[in-house]
Image (tube, rainbow, N blue to C red; front, side, top):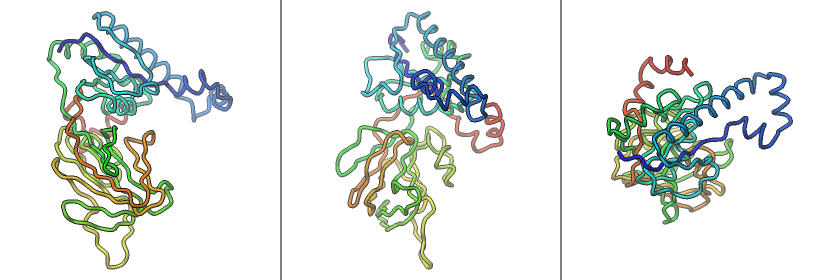
Length: 309
């Protein structure tokens, strides 16, 4: 793979935001006191800055032209680059994935003390070797399924890589909607519904009772959160898999419902009568990841992996 141009998308550390930019008095006081709530913040910041410096240095050594952009400042899809590099954790990787189509991605975990970095094949220690492996084609990107959302007939620009949550905007309220999958239609009441990709199957889906999938699988799944079933009711569409050529349809029975995409930063109103169709996107994400990375969640290796972070 020819590496000529790269975009480095990086997060801002909590320390940068709270201490340096906002100069938050409460945060600074807790930091001064060594309070347990902020004890790891300075270390995570120092790790992040050191890793970011390494990334820039290794790119410069190879005469790879690059632009360094904070993730909060990127607002359009990127092209005409050879590689998108996210420097941060999984949140930074997810944000970066929304801005690429055919450009391959490499995630770099910049702070081992504060981030699990599930999507991040790279870190400060192995970044140089990974660049060499990519340039020499010893390392190939994987195709990872993303979702496509059509809201009231309009396809949304975001392509969720992890999962979406459809729910009432208040966590204590009941989510009401009509759900249709493969010809079966149900009127449901619950705490909301997760719809997620194989890549997202180790996160909220798994916590809600879903199945962990191989990250390169070609189907997605859904899990209804805390279904509200009356006596004698037995809904069929509480959890399951959807093949790549099938879709999920939901019609809102909520006045203030929302669709949350890959976390809390991206949302769309889902009010009374609104209809959303969720399907697999035709444009997979190309990413340098370990194709077996999800397997640790099916074995005892998970405890070992978590103990190292």
